[in-house]
Every structure is written in structure tokens, then in C-alpha cells.
Image 1 (cartoon, helix red, strand yellow):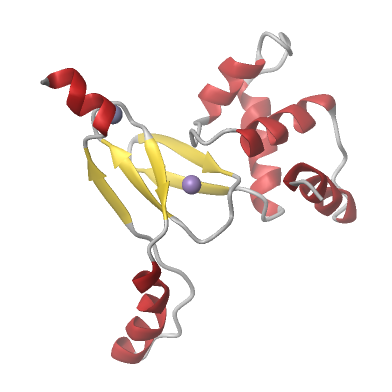
Image 2 (spheres, rainbow, N blue to C red):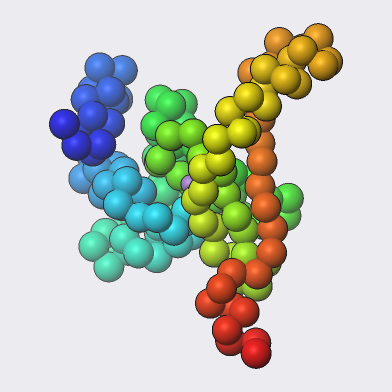
Amino acid sequence: MSALVQALDKLKNMGVRMTPQRHAILSYLLNTMSHPTADDIYKALSPQFPSMSVATVYNNLKVFMESGLVREMTYGDHSSRFDADLSDHYHALCEECGKLVDFAYKPLDELEQAAGEMTGFRVKSHRVEVYGTCSDCMSKTT
Ligand code: ZN
Ligand code: MN
């Protein structure tokens, strides 16, 4: 079963009504590796849905987040980025162009347990990100 079919199934089971726009936003998110902002999604889909507003995109993203299909990554004053890949992975953010690249790193799997033991917390989640300059931007500046 494809990720899209699985996601549609989940929404249906949760009683979420499907609309053409909702479907398009969800499949766009599932097919991109770019971790788009709501504005990116709006720009990409507006030729297809000229009457759709950024607010519509936001409302749909909220529905997906509440359904556990999409995660939001916040960056202070900058726009949130959205990721429909819910597998355990981390992100590297390019401070020049804003590219967000996935990576996995096994030793971090033990981080929550170690943190729990050291702090006495019942650890729920963690967030790890690296910041720097991507290889594309590095080759541009040299
Ligand atoms: Zn870059
Ligand atoms: Mn990701």
C-alpha cells in the first residue's frame, strides 16, 4: 500500500472529509523531499487550484497534523516547514538557501533512554538538527 493510500485510509477512518484540494496538498507533501512551507505548497498548487488561499493550505496542514500524518518544524521567526515522512530521522538545515536535508544516525536512537536515565525524566521526544552550509551553496561561494 502506498503512503498516500495509507494516509487517505487513516483520514477516512478518522472521519475527515476529503476534498480535491486536501488530496492535492497531501500528495504534494508525500511526494516532496523539500520540507516545504505552507507558502511553498500554496505556490506549487495554485495553478491547479486558482481559488485556493494560503489559509486553506494552513487549515489542511492543521488537519494533517491533528491526524498524525505530518510533522511541523518551527524555526523561530521563520515559516514552519512540513514533513510527511514520519520515519525516525533528523535534519540538516542550510543557513544560506534554507534547504532541509534528511539524515539518520543510529547512536541517537539511544539518546532518549540515556537522557531519561540521567535526568529521571520520562522522555517523550527529542529534536536534533544540524546547521551549516549545503554542498550546492559551498560550490557557489568558492
Ligand atoms: Zn544551501
Ligand atoms: Mn525530513
